[in-house]
Amino acid sequence: MAAIHFDSNGLENFIADNELDEIKDQVRFAHQTLVNKTGAGADFTDWFHWASSQDQASLAPIHQAADAIKKNSKVLVVIGIGGSYLGSRMAIDFLKSPWHNELVQGDEVKVYFAGNAMSPMALDELDRVIGDQDFSVNVISKSGTTTEPAVAFRFFKQRLVAKYGEEGAKKRIVATTDAKKGALKNEATAEGYQTLVIPDGIGGRFSVLSAVGLLPMAVAGVNIENVLAGAAAAEKTYSSDDVHDNPALAYAAYRRILYDKGYTTEILANWEPSLQYLSEWWKQLMGESEGKNQKGIYPSSANYSTDLHSLGQYIQEGRRDLFETVVRIDHSKHDLPIPKTGNNEDGLLYLEGKSLEEVNKTAATGVVLAHVDGGVPNLAVFLDRQDEAGLGELIYFFELAVGVSGYLFNINPFNQPGVEAYKTAMFALLDKPGYEEQSQVYHDRLK
Ligand code: PA5
Image 1: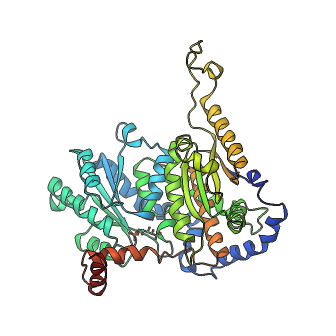
Image 2 (image 1 turned 45 degrees about the vertical axis):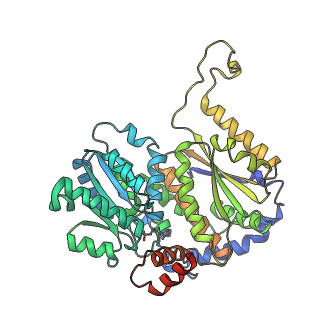
């Protein structure tokens, strides 16, 4: 049974009944384009059947690497940027806790993330957090040439060598990268690091269910087989090409209808702090896939309740180009009763003894009503439970939706040409060899 229940009731005031039918043939065509691999970027759609094609043998290298790290380390430093870290960070927060590192017990391993910023302060602080604890490094880069993780890797390699010596350091590095090419692959081969492969046909932001996401998850104690099983089941659940039978296609369709009405920013909202990184992962997935040729929905996020006291005012009364997709959990992993005191000094007598989960849900329902009244169309993705299979399904749901949505926008959802522009400017200003011509131009612009 599907863990997701997709709810479009919050569109009532914004979309007429016939509008979904009007777009359904376009959606069917976009879906077939994806399924039949006839569209732009089709070489990068292997994520489509990835989870259902994994087995014990293909997961064995990941488990071996995870077991070795668990045996000799208290800390794993995951070095990567964008799709090379957001998925595993999302999964660990979602399935373990955003406080995972503070809550570890016994042999459990803390997982920290580096290489997603150029900040010296961030590196120095992580260095101090690790202190004298035994640690290993999982450096992840599909291209093997991304500057931010490469810089961070230099720092942590140096630290490993200082602590464990040249040979000891090599045994504590796992490089997750392309099977054949890239600087990281070449270095791993030359130095003899253990490597895990990022499949050719899966781009960074779709790679969470490959070794990219699965090794850090396994080290954190996540049951990766169950995550894959959830995604594999989703492949069947979301296989119809009819918007009325396939909620992922309905989601893609409604987004497109809303966009055409001028709702060009989507806010992915949640009511659990452990879902904050789900939004970060989703923002990359949506933004890098759709934001091309001056088209696409701008992906934004809100974490409730906190953002009701910051973004809430804008969402309620600001520019009316927003719509909201709320991810809601039906059964929270924990519940607490609101403590009974018998007095009303804090004005909470009416709530005492009530389940905090129920209060959270009521707040979520109230906010939907207020935002809809304020002119913000609302979609909801209800997830039965915050567990491995549910996460696998959620990942597949959003990946499928954005693939279809990209083809509805008539763009290639699987490339990211725009990411190169900042690199060119940065390399030119850093005088990287090969950028001499641009260096001159950029330096002149700053004069
Ligand atoms: O989706 C993508 O492919 C990108 O966003 C990458 O994840 C990101 O740029 C990191 O690239 P790499 O893994 O090659 O270092």
